[in-house]
Image (cartoon, each protein chain N blue to C red):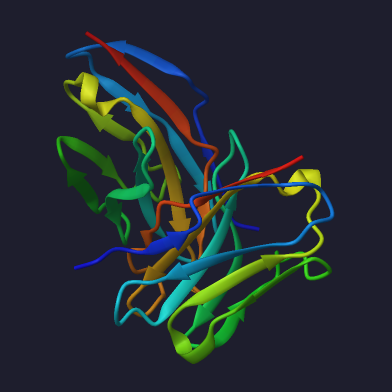
Length: 114
Length: 112
């Protein structure tokens, strides 16, 4: 069974530019999560989808971050415009139904904002 | 709000030494508890989990017991190997939406 796929793996941009990350969850998984992991810290949830609906986006900086999950499968996370403090690893995870189930993580996208 | 606190690293051990990484949590309700591991250059992987009080999760020689009375979920292994070198994250999942709340991670380095 294929795992969670993410692309790109690395991205370097200048501040005020825009960037997008893509995630393809495990087939059949209804719940998809985007986490931000700043160096030296644990991952922090940005947004959670159940199928194509948003369950929790309370910690998403909505003035610059946006995310969508069309057709309840793939998802994209966008940052526009990027700030220096957005430098982090962006992790996508999925689970079968959500609630207290095991989440499976992708390899992450490492973003550096200069 | 809910939170997880882990012992700070890095932790450096010799091969075959005993490992304990402390983890305590604050949560309302009855969360599930997890240990995830991140090997160098790889993504987060589930190591073990426990879903209710007194449950013991175990995998690859690692164990952790869900202690509600002390709100703890300490990770232990009797004899570590060089291949166990990684960053270990304790996490809880609330019983609302299911998001994971992570500790800050503990880096383990095992020397031969």
